[in-house]
Length: 324
Image (tube, rainbow, N blue to C red):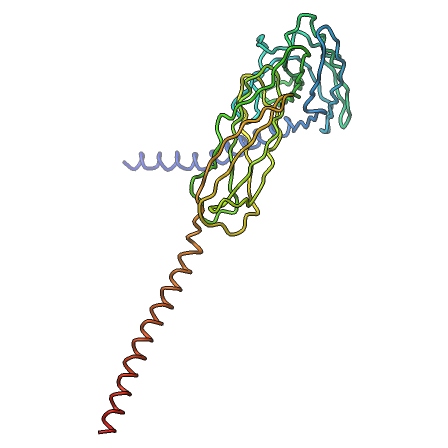
């Protein structure tokens, strides 16, 4: 029994000694790995390229990449297509051919190059629009990807991608039409929130991308206009829905039922679409204390009047007794 206890003590002592050593080596290796990866800072200009073209036309443009890191980096350029992802303007890059693809039309020079530390490099992008290109919108991207240098050992390498968007509108028989898929406030009831949000979901039912213009007109319970908010202009791609959020911040004190009407104008013919919504504002944090104070005042006034009435009766009774 004594030998077993001594053995346990030796094992415990060994664990207490070796765990900190092993832990320190593990942490040291982690720090070294992180130090060796570094941070890559890659910038591109422009981030959005909006173009118009005729079938058979060749477009030449330039993307400028900036290496803001302290080391030189290897960059590879690849033309890709994309499809809308969600309703917030995000895209899903793909090498597959899509309905509105341009990757097969696009070439980049250089395809791969080294950018020195704190230097700028121009990439020439040529887009050869086919003569039989479908009128309307076509879109894609040039993906610039850093290629990490080969490293020996188990070292984590950092790679970064940046992908500016290219939107092309091919001339011809195109349509620019929109529908208001939904118009609402983020909540149906507000109290004393500093911001009231309006959510507009605009659907592109045409063949070309566009930036709808619009306005939200807000009226109070009595039908009086209290605010106008311009709809932020954002691109809506064909066969997609774009959600646009508008905020009303400087509203001051609000109380009652309010209505809001959204007007959206789209296309060369200035097609107009409208939608309405309503919401209620009841700032109970302000109203309830005020009501409580009013109730207390009324209670004190009524109670005081009763006491005054009783006092008046008592005085009048004494005067009658004196006359007798």
